Image (cartoon, rainbow, N blue to C red; front, side, top):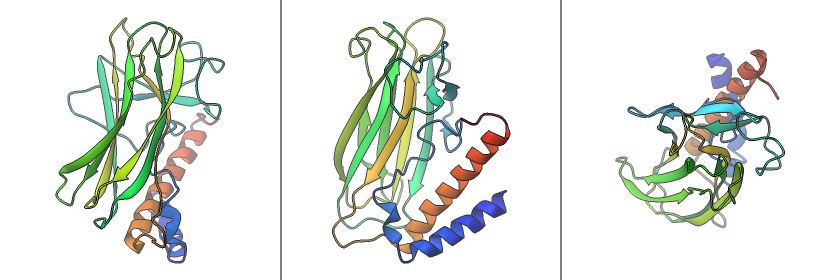
Length: 227
């Protein structure tokens, strides 16, 4: 399976040699919609791990507020605090600020204060944070006391000197016994500067991420968790 992913990534990277702009206008968050479970996300020491659950009576009903293209899964928390992260390494350091859009659906249960936060860190070559942006939390007041998810979005500039971006998703439990911070359809998209395409190494990194996500989704369907 791993070899197939690597070969698939290599083929896509070769195609990107002439169409390297695939980096721009594409969602750089791997599995931001929970359709592949928690694939692509890493746990954080000292915190519970996020979980992927199905829309339904135990969480958010398909008829309750949320994305129209919600698929079958969404993220929810575990324990009092849950956190997960993933990093996209550009393989080079940016030489100019680049416009980005950050978006996602965040929510909770009824009038409880459990909530989710989606955060992006811009890291330099040494891994030092040089900027960031966040979405959330969505409060019970924002939701009018209803169970569901609301759309949130932010735009800005990824700073010059960015070498990698890290995405963080966290949930906080403030009531009851379940961590009902919810998130779905998380996205981070870069806008291409006019006349610029990414370095081949960047395209290859992006291709590898897509290959791994495709493998995770195929494995999920084989296990009977498909849509």
